[in-house]
Image (cartoon, rainbow, N blue to C red; front, side, top):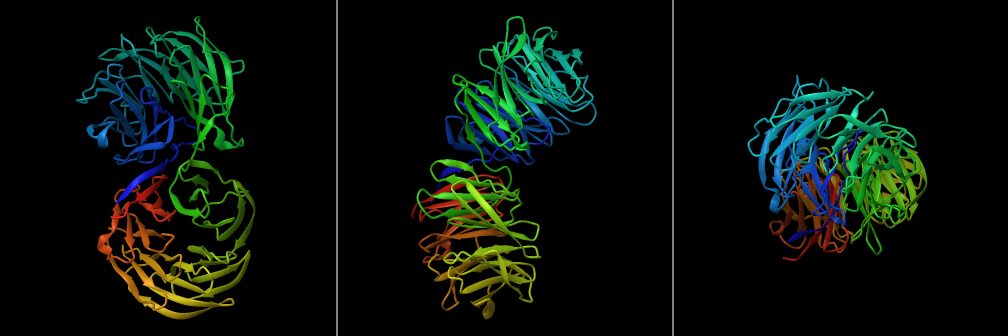
Length: 609
């Protein structure tokens, strides 16, 4: 059996020039955000505890807890809202098609009976309010001509709905049934976020024109503004009220968050400015925020979540980070505690420690895209989409100067000889290239289309897999390859080949969903009928004692086989990663780490059957 031991969560999807509207539940102290088709529930006091909802058919955009905390409404780019329970298996209550385009914001009414959603759509349908159980409309929302970026529901009676958007307008509706009452055009750029104070007396809008305006919640009249002195110097993307309705938190493209004191006579003055602790690049622009209980949460464009304590703002924030895109490879370093390195194709390298979670990003001097990636104790070898192979040394969190080797062809796969790590084998479309250190020692045309390769730990043997499903075994003498054998069993292009740690066996996998374990000495099939995936196998990994092999596939499953038992006595982890599994590694005999399209990393504990 396999049990989920830890999840290292992905970060929120962000977009340059737009805010993201996150929310939470003060009772369980959790926050909600989206990445791809997933909605993530994270607990602020327990960073390793993550729950993921993956039932949306399209990328999710926003999610909100109902006032009683029992239900979550989440929306996606197709205009669909799904309402599901927060407990036992996320049971679906209802699904409604609300708008014809992307939904940017949604809010529950304080009694939990109605939901208002806004976004973009064809014609006039940019905002809709509906009953949560039947989906019937509760009002007409005219007055907007462009995408409506944010909406809010007044938390006390008499109910009001306010909306704002890309037409620079702030509209005020009375109801239910809701109808248009008045409109303000006091902002001179996109109005990004609108929020009522928890006591229901005022609401605030913030905009890309760097201004914030305060309104009366009952009448909709302008009653004040956030003072321009010491204000933001960039677009303000999001706003969140403190629970006592006396302060607000704003975040901006100027890489800072500000806490404002809202006085009785409705003037906002800056009480504290929180600078983003990053390196000062574009990724440090702040795009999302939330004030919940004693936690102040800000989110940067790079996806990092910073947690401040509202009662002790001098304390440095706790950063929670991770990947935003598909994690295509994993490596586990020897030593204790177990360090896991992960890479995603956008060039991000993250370091995780088993039992602790996020342990920092590896900052390379030159950030290049990563397609293939291999690591030994103090060196990373990676290749991108630009015909170059990088060898970068690292100690702790610091990467040294990398050596860049131009190999003149697009690398398909790369492998390091573990016992003599300056030797590396890189496969290209027509053959393979041998690297010693930062030098290309030979480029060998093999005469067939190559799809995968591996090199033995001692560097004396290589196995190359082709598009035709054949495995070619070569012995390496000096800088030349001599063909020893051709093994035929696979019926699809080879996707991965790996030697077992004791070099007595090797395993290979193909795009026709089959994996095979071979004996190195006799070159006979050792374990066959490993045909339990339903789609292409992307990756495979050996346990450190060479007793079991794990495969990860596009069908979202991880399957672990024991070499000495028939393939039918396997352990299957279903739905390990939404969208497919792309990285696999064992940290020890009992723990296997997987990563995938959903940008999360999961550690599974295997228990003997």
